[in-house]
Image (cartoon, rainbow, N blue to C red; front, side, top):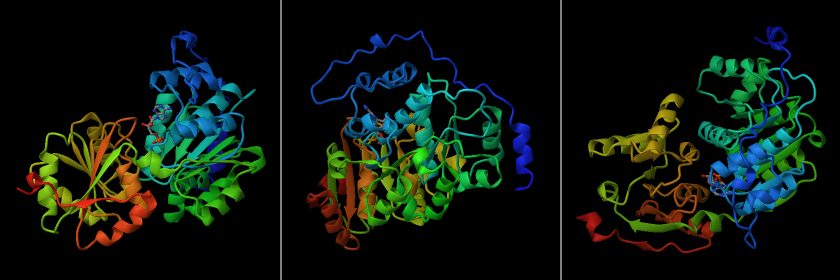
Length: 423
Ligand code: AMP
């Protein structure tokens, strides 16, 4: 494959029109009315390119979230940034707006070639990549920019044909599949202007750093590209990597406990091992649980729980690494549309679930990593809504609570489940 690459590239390097589709002039930015509010940044205040501002308006975003307000004034000027932020803070829109605004305001003069993206976003899981790409589609829908998603577990040829059919502006990818494309010389990163590394801590935990290093090396040197790195935690390892990869960055920190838990009513029920399933079924059959994600720690637990819930008459879907990508995508779509009301997920698969309107998160087991607790409950209480998280603690795993409380900076009151859930 390697030696046929340059030939394929030469053949496919048709000269192409470099500029994005002309911005739509049928929209008048003055129709997007948002009152100026002290202490808040409006998207109007950021001097965004109009087709991008139109995308922002169509999503109903009015004021910047805290991370957007802090980071965008720097990144829109082309500066590098390191952001400490969890999902749910609006970080995705922060880096997408940065990329799109830059691409629109600085169109490439002259010819462009296929398979040479101007921006690349790397994220650790397929779900997260797909979520970022969906957000890119929404935000960028009036820009004419072309985003391509590269993920493992999905058809390589299909992804390749997308790369070869039209000039690519933005690639959103998991590290492994991006390396495959680079190795086969189906994609070239030497023209990358902006590189985003999302959930860097998770990429480190999942052992992706050697791959990410290769990707970073394939892009222009750090002085010649813009690099944005996001991580939920700033360990020494992450800070070292951030230092290597960024040039004179601004650092922005959004405290996780405020964002993650402010809108979530957290309950911890002390249950015996044999009460768990019964209580869960009661919760899921209750009128309030309109859209629930149930987390368990391991794939086999997720599978067995899913089967028990099905037997109990609950219409549910399963989201874990053992399920094919196509099936996961369908399940997530069914959950988003309300066709299924319950998802059973592992932590890794659950990271990519960004669905507004999740009413409940249930931790069937407490997670071993306290960070996972914050991620799990952050699936609810999103976009200004309030949510309920219910964690089951038993004699087997209650010892995990103190570390979670330390991370949250608050005590979690453990109570027996209400009687109606036990009857
Ligand atoms: P994220 O942290 O990127 O997962 O984003 C969390 C959620 O907030 C997503 O559903 C976004 O669509 C939404 N969001 C992002 N920025 C804003 C904003 N400025 N105003 C309202 N919602 C937003």
